[in-house]
Image (cartoon, rainbow, N blue to C red; front, side):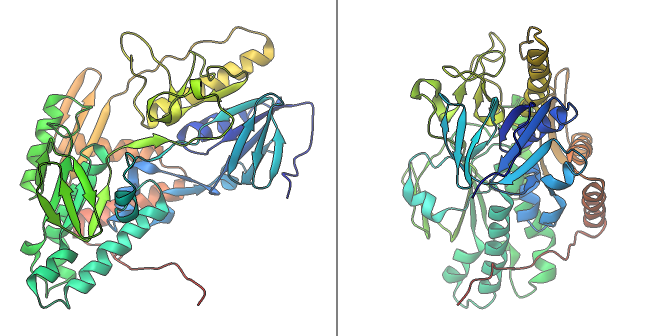
Length: 427
């Protein structure tokens, strides 16, 4: 198989990954006909990662938070979308190898994001549930509601608990949001859908390896988040590390154990790797060391954006920018400007991250926001979180659907999305 892309006198920019960084770059460059853009991704759609947990908790349809790349670029004849996985880079000849063939590039941009970090524990990887894609979010949704169905038929208390109790590992934004959503589901949904279950038997445990949750945010945000979680009935286990999980029992570093059939792993991320990049270009977490223009150390005309990019700026960012959406979006915008400047023979401008703040939501009227000159918690932070996330969802239809789902859920505490839809397999 081949890419089937015409050779022209345009500068070919190959972008690997259509997340926030890659898609932003492609959209900005698509306006300039001097470039031919090739966007390569293992999926044919963009995923809005901040709302994965709402898909997993049956709050949103998965189609509401994804958007087809080809729909984005319907009117850009200089953009080519290809569904493929990149296996290697051959920087000496400016080519990449993929499952559909090799492709030459003038500029290569790596924006393939990060995956779940299992910290080398293969046993946990085999049994815990990650949440770094829509597919994994749907798998989690199936697991939760399948286990509730099994719980209603379990006569023995101990047997029933294995289906009801859920462990969330990781107290960052994802872990806190998942735990809060599970707690709200326990409060408002279980009594409606599963009247033959005692919701008081459901235990939600949040295990975090640091003294406070949301340790990347302010102490005020962290303390308020812990208060919100406790109000919702979440059992917080702080400064504790999960050592093993065999599919039935979670073992913690202090020797204690928790019986649970479901462990949701939100404990960290690690960058996706591609062969052909010098080992010296990698830093901790598989992040790629970049200069101030996002060019990868040791390579020419090869750039890294988003979660896999490591730029250090003293004194604000000595360990690199946070691995969240805003740095990725801003890097994509700046690189688009710099590639245009490079084409014109003008000096490029270094990337400087503008910190717009951090937010996390724990449930209805419960959120925390650390903004550059202001911190707030509670209902105002919650409303800000809703507005900002709605603003960044691609597609007018998706924005409307998400908004209507949120309004309906707010008014009724109910959704019709609690479905177990298993992938079809040929038998």
